[in-house]
Image: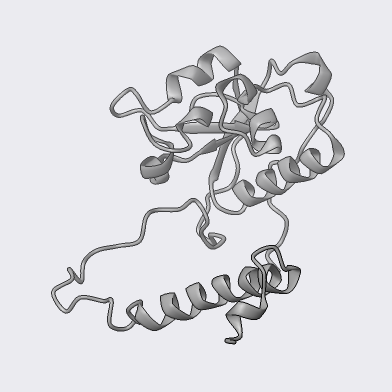
Length: 186
């Protein structure tokens, strides 16, 4: 009698063995037959190809002093990237940032355009790209989302020029004053 004949189809040892063995065989054959990362690079690839753009960049040391120009939420709408020649502004917690040099990310049709020309603090805090979340009233954010929002504000202070502040934030967040001066680089 062979080994397989000693097991019945409903034998728990056989079922357990197959459940363990099948994934192991799959992983081994996949890693054995897939090309190595070095061999998958084509010798004819274009050396000028670049990785997709990201907003994650190092802190800048060449930022001009922050401005304190007043903006209403309605005025801010003019700076959403749709008007040629106008800068792109994003406001976080009432601080207005010039993100024009990242038009590839904040420009029309781009991934973060939802925040262009508005204060979308709540959406940033929630890490949400939904239109209904890109609003200035972040007063009901949970503590973890508030930390995320504060981290975004600090990130922007270190990377984008401050061009002003929003003067008509919702009452729920109006008294949450923030400094438009970035902390010293560490």
